[in-house]
Amino acid sequence: MNMKNPGWAFVFLITLTGCDWKEWKAARAQGEPDRTFTTVSYNYTPDILHWITFKNSSLPFKIDEAPYGGSTYGPNGSEMALDNGEKVRYSADNCCFMWSGPLDKPQRIRVVWLVIHNLSYFNRQADEGYDERTSRKNPPGGRWCQAIVDIQPATGPDRPKMVFLHFLADGSVQAKLGTFLTAKPLPSAQVKSHSAPLPEGQVCKNEIDNPWYGIPRKPHRE
Image (cartoon, rainbow, N blue to C red):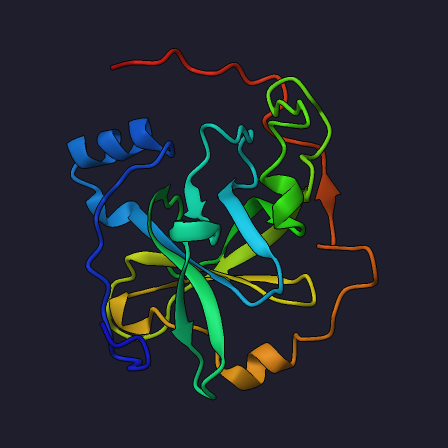
């Protein structure tokens, strides 16, 4: 697949990864598949973004029930070129976000994600005795972050099918609806305008406690 061609299209596999599964089935049963959106996340930061999740900000947030926005950790992340040839990491085929309200109006969401700023420490968390379900603290080598942003309506005549999340180096997050044809990174000039680094020691604008704390593991099923 030629990722340098802005007209490329994804072959999207609906892989309902621990997200709004009940809502998705209900929408299908009610004949509302057009209110179900896959997600593509673009990472313009120097760190790895893992376990990106998001939900309408007016609803209670539980990370194990929130729609999945992907991960740029290891094989979960792919790479494509900006319009100036620079590379950006992204994660696609993430499902499913249920849209509420009119599609021509912004929808406010809470985005929660893990920044892996030291991969070697992060990969040793089991050796350090860290358990994300019993510790309120962030994992070794990682910090959890949160942002409240508006998903902007799509432009153009085609009905949107996807949510695009853009994580920029200055800590800002942008979100927009779009289609297969508009699934591409931001223009390099726009990325550059958000390239000012965060203050030393910060990995995002709003750090939070580990959101997996206190959530029991689901029983293993064969």
